[in-house]
Image (cartoon, rainbow, N blue to C red; front, side):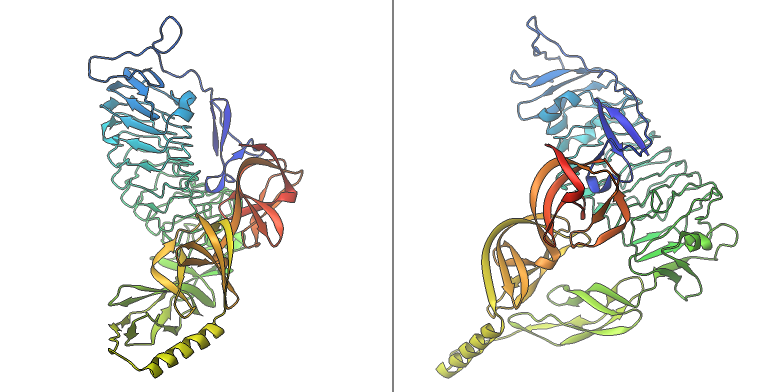
Length: 600
């Protein structure tokens, strides 16, 4: 783990800096500090000491109302009144101290624009890091890093970043990408994807913590990365808690010896395919429960190959945990290892001595599986949420009925797969109901009576309740609508993002099931979201390690907060009538175990 001294503030990148939330001044973390030095930026000032406007001959004009301006290297720049940092043509000053030349203007910069071609020198470590108000970066195609080797910390801790297209960057000469995007977008959770799919990593040696703490990331395509010189992947994807898919199957890791905490805290990750990895005997894989490569994951399956290695000679205990089962097994049940006992875990077979032949797919051995079922129809895909069935068996799933249509099937047959999915090959056809013209008063009366009877059966109570709610972490949350018969009906083409905040103005109870309204006639189940009060503060734990809980009150067994450690909190919640503070995505500490000492 590493830490940099940036503008006299300790910034921690550690295993406990989970899901974009920052642990400050941890007494237990070994860190590296460097002097921030002086920013390589010059400003032109008049005799009164005020910044004077200076325009060059290239057409890069500095407006009179600029907040600030200057020159970095040979690049002129200014901050416009709309809080955009404009950078003109030239070559930037080299930097290797993880300090941005514009750090002192962090509150005044919400956007960066490369107005003209900007050439980067060999090292631009931390060029835009700690610009906490930065939301967008424009015209990245004008940013030339084709001869740059060090782009570490480039956008680290830009916690409000919402939009950046880095697909045009020429990374062919880069060797160090460590911490490049770490803790980006961690305040507003808006940065859900990064397009790095076309990057050339043939010379890259270090991707330590490159995406660490990017808790909002849902999409990240690194499948085509060529990595023949990679030496360290420590914490590369740590605490990317919403990342569901990650394809590293084609990576060349023959020279990589540091995988500590590589996937740690990636609780939404569905699977990993490491079967093509040729791992060295000297690899570092972290210690289970501390900085283990798989700590905090809960995979549905993993693919392993004969050149995998999870039993290093340095005595490291590697554990592949699972909340689904205590045991992992391959498809034919001939190989099994523990999900809880590191001495009997994945390294039991993968020690590079007598590794199993071929590709083996391991899954948690669970008696039943709960998953959403997708049914194809002529009206589009239908999602039946939270279906449960015995593993390896076929089950019957009810077909959703649509108002104004009849379906050619009432049920479909689905297979419960060991990898954690429930699937069906059947297709449903819906036919629109044609209503007859006219109709008798008697028929109308019967319909009214039926509806009244149904209303008596489906009792609905409403309460005006203005509050903010947060959806649970893990998967997107279904939305329901109240139909004319007072039944809650699933909306198939909409969902709320998991771990997202929403305003609600009404609480609705239908047959003892509680819902929160999030839009006109759109509701989410109270069991899938929790009310909270917003706050911005730093709290300090009291004089012993403190337990962490999820929003539903369940204890997180494998992690604690260190005694007398400082944590940023953004939510106050009531869990089972007791007050808690949020310190990470779906992770809370009791108010009685901590004290707020600073509001932000």
